[in-house]
Image (cartoon, rainbow, N blue to C red):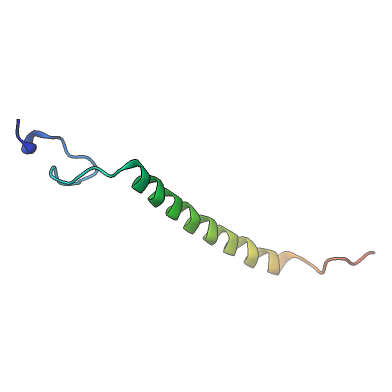
Length: 58
């Protein structure tokens, strides 16, 4: 069998090396951190608009 008969995944060429588990995890963690940062920014901006002063009674 030649490399040409290997099925391609995710549009990657057949001769591309598969990613290691550590590299996949690092990429997933980077994406997760970016998503969490964006979500935190959304919460911060929403909280500043809707929240009143804290620590006041009455």
